Image (cartoon, rainbow, N blue to C red; front, top):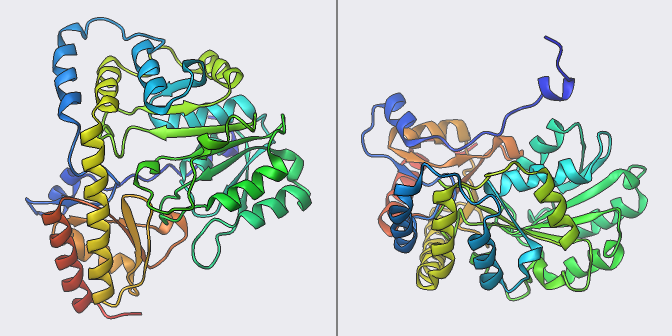
Length: 373
C-alpha cells in the first residue's frame, strides 16, 4: 500500500483517557476525570430540554445551512450572519482553513506547545509547520513571530498564523498590546490570514486581553474560532464557530461537508447560547476552582502557571509517568503533557468543588509516595 510519508509518519492526536478505560485497567469503580477541560456543570438545562424536543425528528436531515444556529451566533456575538460558519467542533474548522488557504508545501506558523490539532491537520494536508518558541514564562513570544515573518527564509511560505489566545495547555494569554504589534506588521495582507483560536475566551480574567473579534473591522485578514465545548457545556455534541470575513465564510461553506453539524447539536447550541445564567455560573465555577487550585498547589510547593482557561498546568517535579499512574490507581485522571514537550508537567481541569478537593488530596498523597527528581 503506497501512502504519502506525511500520512504514514503522522502521530494521531492523543485525547484524554476515558473513564471507562481507567475503570477497566485499574479496577477502580469511582473515577474523577479532570483531564479534558470539560464543563463540570454538564450541559445547560435549556440545551437538554431542546434536545428532548428534537428527538422525534431524528429521521430528518439537519438544516445544512444551520440557519437558526448561525443567527443565534449573530445575536450572541454581535456579528453579521454572513460572517459566521459552524463546524463539527473547532477541529473541523482548523482543518478546513488549512485546506482552503494552504497549498501543499506552503505552511502555517504556530507557537510551540500549542493545540496539537494545528500540527495534525497541517501534516495531513501536506502543509509545512513553522514554530516559534514560547518564552521562559510559557507565554507566546509575539516578537519571535514578528521576527520570523520579517526575516526567516520561509516567511513567504506562511499562509496562516494560528494564535491560541488563551493557549492550551499552558493557560497563558497574549496581551492586546502584543497582538496589536503583530497586526501592525501583517494586518491587511491578502496572502496571510491570522486565526485567533479562542476556545477559552469566556474564562479570561486578564484586564489587558482583547478578543480577536475586536480587530476584525480594521483588519481584513483576521478570523476567530470559538467553541461551545467549554463554557457552554456541549463537548459531546461538537460545535465550533468561525467568525471571519464574508469571502472566507463563503469558501468554508463550499468546502465543508453538508450536514456537518447534526440536528441535536444545532438545537442544543441555540439553547445554550441563550442561557446567559448558565454561562455566568460556568465561569464562576471555573474561577473559584482555579483560585482553590492555586492555594493548594502553593501549599504543596508545586510550581504552576496562572491560567486564563478552565485548567491549570503545573510541574510535578517528579517522574510524571509514575505520578500519572499513581493518580489513575486512585481514580483521578489528569493530563500528562509529553506530546507538548513538557516532561514533568500535568494539566488539571477544574471540576466541581468536591472533585477538585479529591484531586488535590490524591496529588498530596502521591507526592509523598514519589520522590522529586
